[in-house]
Image (cartoon, rainbow, N blue to C red; front, side, top):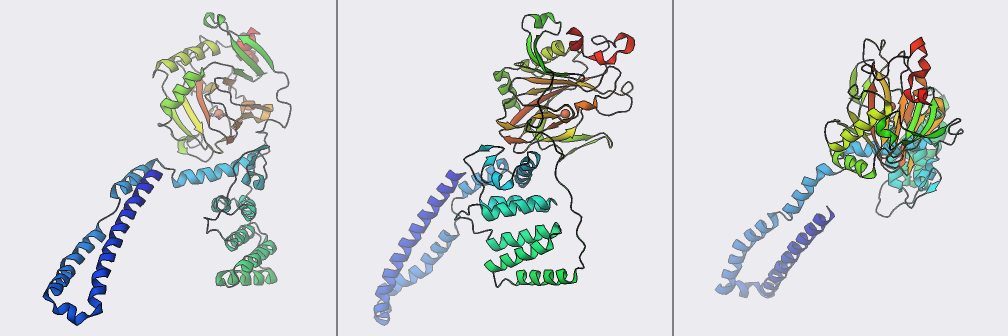
Length: 476
Ligand SMILES: O=C(O)CCC(=O)C(=O)O
Ligand SMILES: [Fe+2]
């Protein structure tokens, strides 16, 4: 894009140079003429040349001026516009930043100067970056976030190229955010500060006047403020000891196939069953899956069990795509491993879902079972397997709030948890959250194994000891 802009400017320069040469020649001719106009035009050679110039040269100049410059470069830029971030991408990115400081309880001013959850990065936000995020938060009704970002804007470095926002703009918006938060006295001070920077601004004077009257009369009710804070969860994984009774094994799931290469397994919880299998996807296969799907991703849908509909939702800021287990040799290999490792019939499962989370990408607290009333009459999910297809430098844990367990993505590993027990009861402790990504890009691949269809692989335990649903647990 930049090279097209450069080439466009070069063509403009050539046109400018041609016009300047023309002007120089005409000035020379004109100066000669003006020294003695009467004598000059009396000479037929001169008057002919003058008439000819006036007749045809100006037509030429008009055509030359109208001729578009750098059309091919403009077209190339136009053609590339589709691949640039959209307005929605920008809003998502701004919302992602807001989520990062909300979920990880970070000070907005720290975020603005590149200090992210204890790590200092060599990047800072400019005043206009902070102002933009503040405006976006304000438009989404997140007034507290808007206030914090405006305060950060007042402290951020103003780059020379940014004519906007001025201090007056920032204080004016801060007053708006604080009014929305019911902080009227503070808002008045902000308007006064704005007026210090723009003393003759009539709009600010009027706003200040109205607010003063309002404060004197004390007639305005305090607005109801929506609370955007997310429940106190521990996405950092540092709030409580990670796992109390975790143990590690080399696990073969009773499969002859895995007997030769048992899987390094961290068992986090037996009831409900939650385990992390290491090195089940090679870096090459993970990279193959990412590369073959990255252009196919679309903004994720979320399924609403109550309305039985799917829609692009704010609950999950991510892009995703489905991946058929028949599609290629890589996924067939993985499908085979899933069957052996989970001791389930993979024919009774959904196709794979690949998800990519960008800045602040997250999936709010949810359960994976579909919450249908009778699992025996309607299909439901028995277990979830999340394959981590990338490392994530910071953030992006899968958090089980009720188990005090945060599992951090590690390229090649797979997290497995049972969301129903053998009677089809919901394992509500498997409620989980995809924590916002702070730095990096998180790639996962989900596999949901269905409850129905496992009758032969996982018959119900005799005597109704439902806790023994996990084949793996019986084995230990
Ligand atoms: O991103 C994660 O860690 C969790 C994803 C998840 O829970 C889901 O897709 O259902
Ligand atoms: Fe989930």
